[in-house]
Image (tube, rainbow, N blue to C red; front, side, top):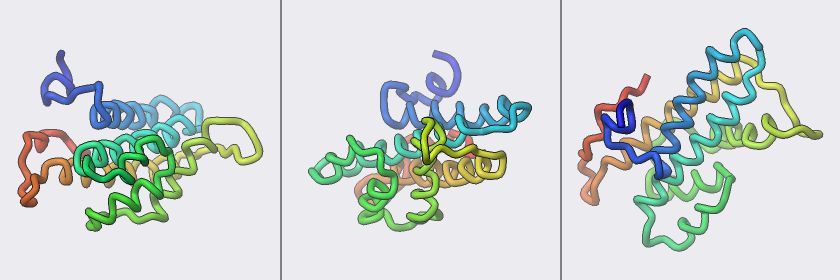
Length: 159
């Protein structure tokens, strides 16, 4: 397979692969929706990507933690992130950022009383949070049990 998934040996059939796929889709959406002026798909996809990056960490680094593995069925980014912070507390996002991003998961996708329109600035902020989560996720996944980072994922671009 050519492209990101073939070149870097990312398996699309994994939380990390799907997170990366959603990340690329959200980034592309900024340009796609520019003429439309509403960025709901960007924000909701950023939230989904963030969830999958978090679940990639749970899936690989919390395999012996029953409570963490139960969170694999959750969509609550703040709760999932809180669990991850118990082991990996060095993040440049906080629970407030993650909660804000997580609100787009439903509120930007489905009609109803809580529906919201997402403008360009909120979409850019959602992507910024996602970029920071993505960067830290790869650093965590590269660490072995001794804290040494190296599994060949460093060649991915973080722009």
